[in-house]
Amino acid sequence: MTPLSPFEPARLGPLTLRNRIIKAATFEGRTPKRLVTDDLVEFHRAVAAGGVGMTTVAYCAVTRAGSTDGHQLTLDNPEIVTGLHRLTDAIHAEGAAASAQIGHAAPVANPAGTKHPSLAPSRVFSPLGMRRTHAVTPDDIATITKLYRDGARVLADTGFDAIEIHLGHNYLLSAFLSPKLNRRTDEYGGSVENRTRFPRQVVQAVRDAAGDRVAVTAKLNMADGVPGGLWLDESIEVARMLEADGALDALTLTGGSSFENPMFLFRGEAPIQEMASTFPRALRPGFKLVAGRFFREYPFEEAYFLPYARQFRDALSMPLILLGGIDRLDTIERALADGFAFVQMARALLREPDLVQRMQADASYESLCIHCNKCMPTIYRGTHCVLTT
Image (tube, rainbow, N blue to C red; front, side, top):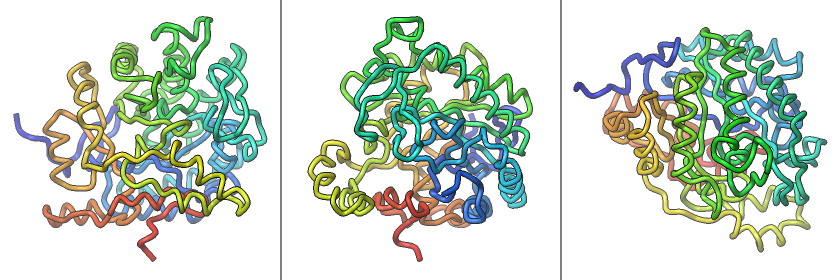
């Protein structure tokens, strides 16, 4: 079999991308009023001009209560439509496809910013909101499913080529999958099939709204990275159900919990000092005392999710997308040789939006990203690499 080339056109559902490299969803911090800004347009235009096959806008909350802190794009606001058209037009003009991640933060949300109570499958204490969450009701499930459907229609109508449904990082749908966060005894809790019911319902609603004109993917946690959370034995079962439903064009494989263990996703040094500086001065000492338990450190290595992701490659036939510490061309080639259809990159593209073009021009070129994770705290003032001017 001829190895897949990172730089040749590739099919993703109804799309043909110019290559197999996708800018991953990472909150840009450029929507202070929950609307598209010139800064957001330029952020994605630059990445598109830098050579990726597709760039992902992150993330589009289905409603303000579903944003993390009240500052994400909110799809139930009709004022957003003109800006979304402008954003997709700018991406398309550079030859890339436009994707949008759609989601509801639920337990990851901070009520102080959203002005709404945070939700979860069951009542749990939220270290982000410093209070207990509200348990989602069956009426909430129906309402939120409709919000996903309506939001997907907005994205399809404003020129997005793909929609990525957030099933990871213990956001709402991921929290339903988690045996630790989902303690329900109704049809949405207990068995893996029951815990998957709501996420599968949402995936189908998004597909119904998008039709066959837009690629629909999902970003699924392989493991939450916390004791008692979702792990490979059950997440592979979830993935098999999603594949059997036939509503997805591809599955992006991720891990970690923004609710309890974010560094499981990022790996490398935890930027505790820099995160503390984003808090009011009186709260910084307390944050530093407890931050070590929340921001645990894991050694960084290229493609650190690959060993877990290979388990999914063996279990599924649908296209899979690998992410996690992918900064080098030989790592991309290795992922494609292992059977993954695409790769996603994030932090390296903050440092060098034109990294894909640099790799294509020089196969030995190595990213300048040093995995310091000091970009993480910058989400509150415009996500960027602190080593760039």
